[in-house]
Amino acid sequence: MKQLLTILLLSSSIFSFAQKKKNVTADPFAGLDTAFQRVLKDRKAAGFAVAVVSKNKILYAKGFGYRDFENKIPVTPTTMFAIGSCTKAFTSSLLGLLNKEGKLDYDKPAREYLPELHFFNDNLNNSVTVRDMMTHRTGLPRHDYSWYLFNTHSKDSLMRRIQYQEPTAGLREIWQYNNLMFLTQAMISEKLTSKSWETNIQEKYLIPRDEIFEPFY
Image (cartoon, rainbow, N blue to C red; front, side, top):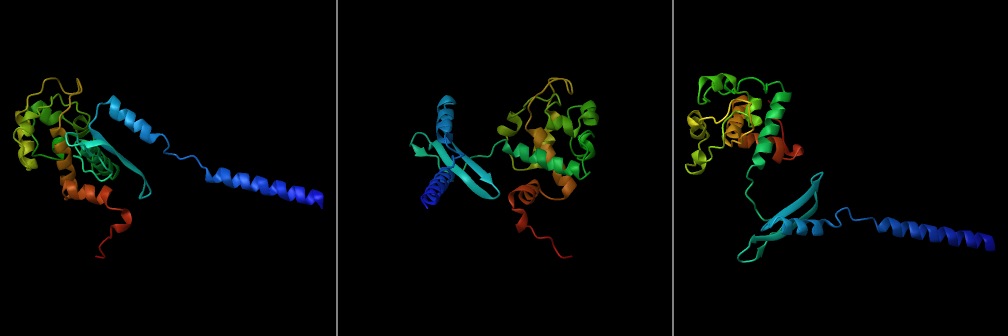
């Protein structure tokens, strides 16, 4: 009887210890706050927000620093930021889907998909491929003033300016960033899908798949 009681007590202690160990599971996000505060300081940033999402669930969301530095208004998980060049990743992934579906060949001249596009000379017109535009190796420098100082919501108007933009290097010689090369990629996606870039991004990436219903016809 004494031995039985001892075994039961030991078993109970082991079970209790195991339960405690299970309950004290390490927080996978422990230390993130400290790390991001360090980034804020090292980068001398005004503020930013971070979110970790898995299977449609937000596991971690927090703001760091200030969205209005002068008035010390803090960044929160719901602070709105300009999306900036993150749209380029959306555009590239959209072209990747079109390539996977066999609707787009990266190494064909871009004007085969978008005849309205014209470059500075015939050599570029005949030779610049979709891949060249995606990898910023067309020879065109930024030419940012052409859209930054004279901005418009018309994609066609912006695209027409490309023919006046002089290259500063040969095709595929060097890497040179050019925002308008991604504008034209977006227009290629519109041409191939008969949908606006905005609609394509909304349907492919922003709407949960179980909310997209196919028509019955």
